Image (tube, rainbow, N blue to C red; front, side, top):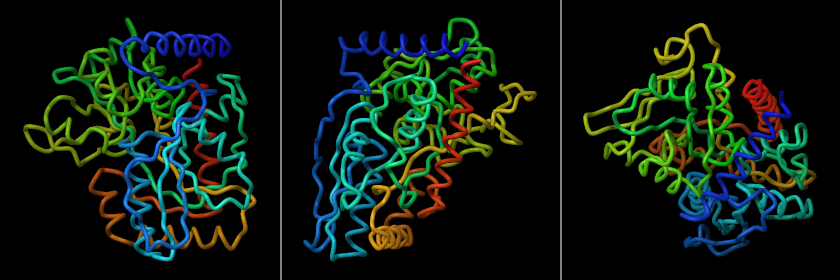
Length: 355
C-alpha cells in the first residue's frame, strides 16, 4: 500500500508542478540547482569578522524574517562579528542542504536548518519518496531559533465541517510547501484519520501560497501565524484549525479577537471526531541555527552562547511573541536529540497518511 501511496504522491507533485508553470513559478524540484539571492540587509555588527547565515528559503518568508532578526540581534550583542543572511533557494530547502554538507567541518558559515528538510530526508532515504543527495547527519543543530504552530486557513464563510466533508468526497487541495512538506504531513495525516485525502498544490513562497487560497485555486493554506496576521485582520482568510493541543490566541479579525481550536484535548475542534487521537499530526515546525557536524567544539560553544544572548534580548524574543511564534530554547546536544524525536514522529505521520 505504501508503494502505491508514494507513487501517487510523486505523480501528484509532478503534475501540479507542471500545471503551475503556466501561471507562476512553482517550487523547484529537489534536485534543482540552488538559486542564490541576497536580500537587502544592513550590517549587523561593527564591521568585524563576517559570519554568513545561509537561508534555504526566499526573502520575506517566515524563515527568512527570523534569520534576519537573529542576525541583526546577534550583531548587536556581539559587535565583533558581522552576521549577514544569504538566501539560497531551490528544492524547498534541499539545494542549500546539498551545498552546506559539501562544506568542510571547519566552515564558519551557519545554516538555517528546517525540520521539514530533515523529515523529507528521512522519508526519501527510507521510502524513496524523492532523491536525497545529502546526509543530514552532517548537519548539527546549534540552537532552536524558530518554533511555530501550523495554522490551517480557509476562505471566509467556509467551515471546518465543510472542509472535512469535502476531503471525504472530492478531496482537499492545499497550499503550503511541496508534497511531504511538514504542513502536508500534519494535515494529510489528520485528514487520513477522517477518511479523506489531500492534494498539495505547490507554490513558490508564502505569498504565492496565500494567493492560491484567495484566488480560489486551493481550499486551504497551511502556514505560519506570521504569514497571515494581516490577511486575517483584513478578513480575506480565516484560521480554522491550529495543529496544537491548545487553542491559539493572537489573531484579530474584522470583528475582534479570534481563538483557533486545536486538534487534541479540551481544545479539540468540535467538528473533529473525538474518538480519534490526532496528536501524531502535531509536528515540530520551524528550525534551528546549525553548523557542520564535526566542527570545532570551541566554535560550537561560542555560537551556542551567542544564540542564548540573542534569545535573552527582548528585541528578538519579544518580536517572536509578537508575530505568533513560540519561545522554545534548546541548544547543542539537546537540540540534536529533539530533532531526532521530531523526525521519528514525522515518519510515523507519513505512515499514517499512507495507510
